[in-house]
Image (cartoon, rainbow, N blue to C red; front, side, top):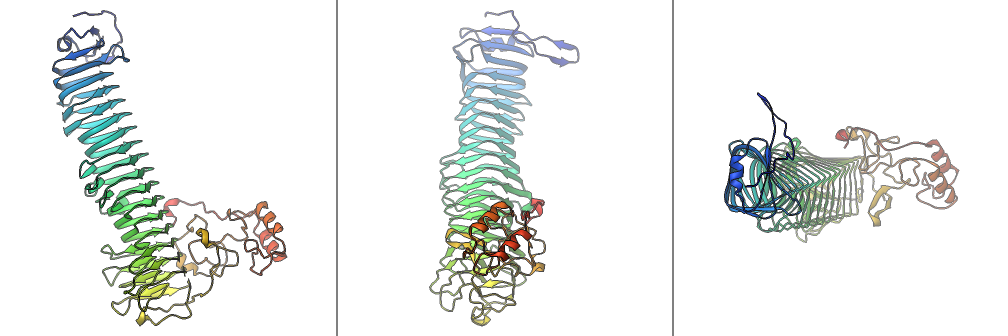
Length: 582
């Protein structure tokens, strides 16, 4: 054995007796690494010259660093077994090819800049990985903690008490932990476990990407234990193939215990993107998924964009707020998952959804006559129910319980089946339901069938063109002369401080009907009245410009100019706590 007496580094090991110096030993492939380990003391470093070091290794209760002398030419360690029992072992810039490895008895194994192919068993110990690539890895554990930073994991199964991943790329990895934290993780998989990622008590994820995972037999890509605390932020799910499985399965009962925020779910082949018991979903985008975007027994859904999915929102109890739900199959919002209520849909745009049955826009099927359902300040337009045999509106279909519909626009919807109505169908002939319909703009409000035939009656209803800005381009904001402006019941909008875009509610004499509040005298729709609006108005002077004709007289004139000047420098965007906004 060749020993170099120069000290490569000094480790400050604070012990009862004072400070111990650390020695550095360099060996070559012809030397015995196990002999060097046995001869080492706590804090020592063993440098390995380039080459292969064969044989089993056992670290017994020692604090030791083993690293390649030349990081550009990593030493290779191979054998049938690696055993770390007690102590702290750091391995740096090595290639590890053991058939199996064990980390036991409160020891710590720290791998930095390594490549490893092994089956690792961890019992009451910690493994810390940095800039390390693991392939063919099985990390079985009992009371273990796994901490990986800037690593590559492939073809791995990891089971631990706590897992922390940061800056990790994972391919074909299955994980299960009591506490699981993932940050900046890129994930893909093919034909692996029933559930790829499972956290029994706590799941925290941020800035992660799950792309091109393929396992049609998988029940869930991510699953949680009963009543687990979940926080998922700024994650991306795209082109994953789970057939009838779900991307995220939440099994906690309270929506407040699981939050999914600022996440994208795009073009996934799955039964549902987010499913289970309860969750809060904020500012997320669901587009072109083959199954349902959201399917929850209890939920709070706020500022979601749900477009072009095989189904949109299925909810039992909770709220759907400030969301755009457009172009989906199998209805826009369906409340039927054992729903006892209350269910509230507020400040939502529900447009161009279809169904082969009833209720293209909203379908309400609570199981209790005591359920309370509320739709307030929402725009429900262009939805279609295509059933040829069952009567039901394209806009809203409801049965059971009590339904409040206030300050809503229902227009351009198309029903299907005999005795269908286009905008609203109340199935009062089959089951008891109480309808509270008031202060709405509804096509055909002046000529509907009686309630016994699925029709309805209401108070202060408007049957007129709502005058949208550009419905052909899905712009359902209100033109200045819309009959929906200042036509709602402000009391019914109590507790709704903003519209779907975050614009303050009640900017005029009363709340506007529909999801969008009109900012008075804002000609260019930027929510401020400035010289830009004035210039547009002057350019349209004496013309029939619907954007600049603020009073709806048919021509832009001094009345419109005075209205603009009266509102000069006004801003319509609300500055409030997002948590309280609806």
